[in-house]
Image (cartoon, rainbow, N blue to C red; front, side, top):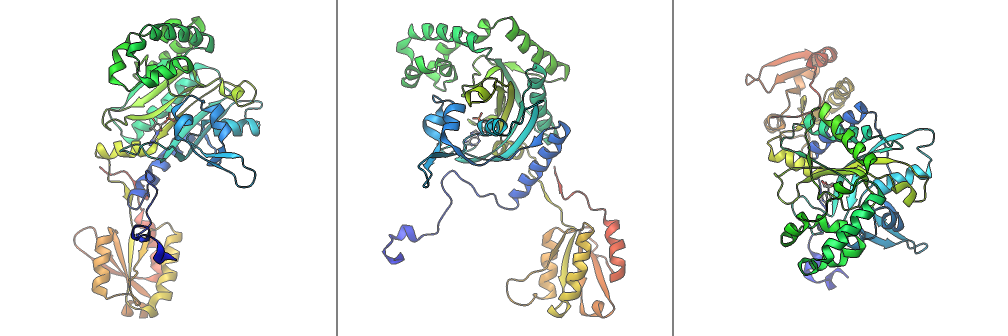
Length: 443
Ligand code: AMP
């Protein structure tokens, strides 16, 4: 069979375009970031929610919005073989979280603060910072109408970026007001753009009546000056909406967060109301958006639930890691305490049981392993011990074993001092290691 395949099909199989493997040592950076995120979420009392990667397509059509790029052209959808239902690999997770909140009555009797981390899928043109499978961290506060929650969520991102040591990230803010205010603005926009039909590109013309707000979001440089002169939504907000927005700004100012108003920030998604925000950088080229979010008080109802106020954001983790790298924060990795050098196979039972006991005390240990049968020469083992970056080599030699002992060789101080210790002393020695946290940021 395989001989009938064209030569190219017999080549190695590779990952799907736009979907990446995360390999060591890079994966250690991911783990480091995820650890930081979890710690921070605990500090803000956000609990983890894990929803399925596959959801009914209808969830995104209704929840993300029919006229969005995501739903129009970016979803990985397929038919369930069993019943023909259309399913979709989640392109974002706010609809999934809200679906779960409705299904399990999560906001009954009080609000919920939730966060998630996981892969999302969008069929976009792959480029630096834009992938077809990418990882989002998201936080959602469900059931709280107050502007202090909008501020809390922005502060959470601000705090995370500060904690990671990221620089030069700006916060952009806007308010989308209430649906009826947007409706009046929408009419004004349609009127304005209809007077300039000749200046609209094909996409804008198509959106003129379906979603004119999205025209403001255009990336077409030829339309920028037209868009700049368009009626601004902020001018259409009523007193309550303005007060909501002012309160968010006051709270951010009280916490020393600076922002800029971006009237063109409309977000690509239909269910937003009031505050919208984005965290962005100029240091990642075209894909500078790191985190986007806002209030989406209309989504619960749109998905068949009771009217429930909600606010949240989604953040692209690849871009955060890329920015950390660009800014020189790349030296994150596991720190290894011990490399175990083992003279010959007959010593393995002693050595491995001693290593088990040490690991139980929290010591990180890489046991020597050879790429052929046997353990390799002592010389090659010491070479690997040096290359491993471990602080110490534990040498399980023939002589040492006869004395129920092990040699401890220091690897990082340049002296290579070696001290023989009895196996019974090892636990005490392990406690003196006081190994630093396994993953630490480096400079
Ligand atoms: P969105 O759900 O479109 O608001 O996106 C939220 C965040 O996810 C963005 O600010 C980006 O950081 C990230 N993001 C969105 N799409 C992609 C993608 N295709 N590849 C990588 N990151 C993405």
